[in-house]
Image (tube, rainbow, N blue to C red; front, side, top):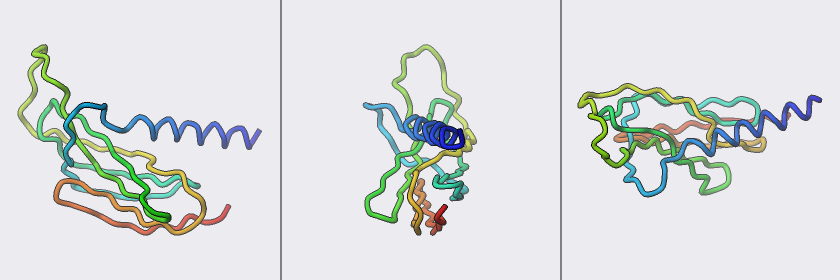
Length: 130
């Protein structure tokens, strides 16, 4: 039963990982990031970010890469959907906060880079053996 719970929990994390990228065909730019924090829960690396979107029509998410063993790169991005003329956008900064799982990893030491518009934070995290 304990193993089943762990598998279901990991499946939920993988579903969350799949749902945070921008849709295809939109122009993506780096988002403003005021604060970034990297945490670890079990074998999952999480990123918490806060910042401002440039207007009320912007959406935000993350693009995650693991270019090398022991490294995770996270870009915090924003994009707008095509204007259909159905609604008007607010022309004011919109605050956002985001907590996302960005990687499920094996025990070891990882360097996690979180990049936004004009900012980059790098954290080193240790995943202990369970």
